[in-house]
Image 1 (tube, rainbow, N blue to C red):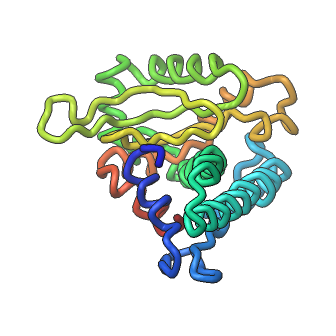
Image 2 (tube, rainbow, N blue to C red):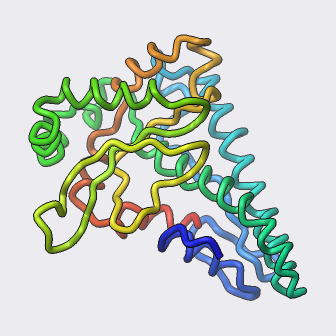
Length: 249
C-alpha cells in the first residue's frame, strides 16, 4: 500500500469486506460506499465572489465525480484483493489517491468558506490565536496574504494552496505555520500537518466566472474565508481537523 499518512491508512483499511462504516458512508455488499457531503450554506451564499453556477457545478458535479470514482476504485481494489491479484491492486492505487484526495480536499474546502461579511469571515474577531501566529510568522496579515496569494498564483496546472500548522508535540515549533501547495488532488496528509484552510486552484473552481482572470479569483477568495473554522483547526489537533471528514470516509 502507498503510505500517505493515517487518514489514507484508514481509508485503505476500510476496503476490508464486511466492514461497516459510519457517518455518510453506507454499505453495499459489505463495502463502504462514500457519499457527497452537504454544503453548510446555499449555492448562492458566496456571491458575488463565487457564483451560484460555479458552486453548484463544483459541488454537485465535480466533487460528486470524485466520490463516485473513489467508490468504483475501492470496489475494484477489493475485488483484486479477493482474487489475490497484486498487479490489479497496484493499478487501482493512483485512482484511489486521486479521487480520495479530491474527496478529502473538497470536504475541507467547503467548510473553510463562508458568506462574505458574515461573522465567520471577520478575521480579527473570530481568529485571535491564528491572527497572532500569522503576524508572528509573516509580520502582518497583509504580508501573509501577499505570500499566500503568490503561492497560489505560482501553481502550474491544477492544484491547491494550503495554510498548515506543523503540530509536533513537545517542541517549540508545535504551532509553526507554513504555506504549502499540492499538485492535482494530492491531499495534505503528512505526519503532524494540520490543514488550517485551503484554496482550490483548479480551473473548475473559478473559470466560468473569472475566465482567465485567476488573479481576481485569488483576490476575492479572501472575502469568503471562514476564519472561525480556520481558528478551530489551528487550535485543535490533526485528529480534530479530520474528525468530521473521517465520518465521511
